[in-house]
Image (cartoon, rainbow, N blue to C red; front, side, top):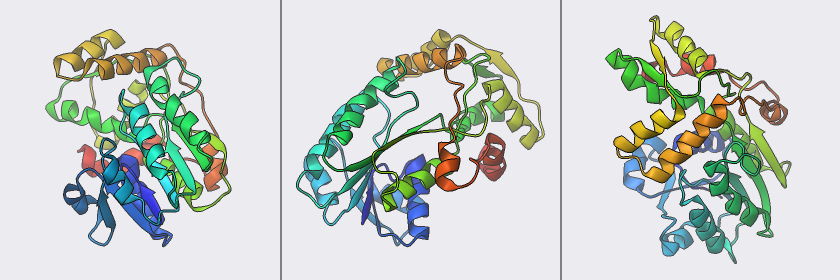
Length: 283
């Protein structure tokens, strides 16, 4: 039995598909099982779990052999990771695969600092472990859809900085391999797409797929963070996004990894492939 936390999210949904296709028993943990049921399927075992409720974590763990640990991004990541690491002590769990973030352990970013305590905790747990550090997701392009539909210019805060965004399906496929085999125990993987792209190049790819021109407007990372705060985004999260934009804009996020290809035996999917496969969401 494999327990997937964050099962209703972008990676969690794809990981459920991967494991079920391989006929591996899966239990999906989410804060609202009733709400997640439609997205995850009627046959799947769903349990309620909240990282701030230790009893709910304990009730999700019986007979679990491997755990996929994904906590929603934010200043609370370290606390949530620690809560689950406390919960697994003395249980049947033998392995943890932790979803971390691009640059964790190396980049001077808030998102890195959020994940570093959890990474250390997993590595020091005495259990088998794998840490995944994915680049930005290709699916983040969905955030541009409202502006595209409204005909507004999309504000881009990363300038000419490049980032090799990764398809969530590839991240899930790697996670499934790490959970189901011991081949990747004790490994840390940076997961990227096949080529570093600027945000403007991603927009151009979207425009070609949609058959229309999409206007863009350059803004600074500070301007983008101010917009987020004005829209009600918590300051700590807006500041982290500002740091991330500035990091990409400065050319620090253009690195590329061959981990997806080495693990899956094929090239990672391109951003163009993700767009083509998800056109109904983008129109």
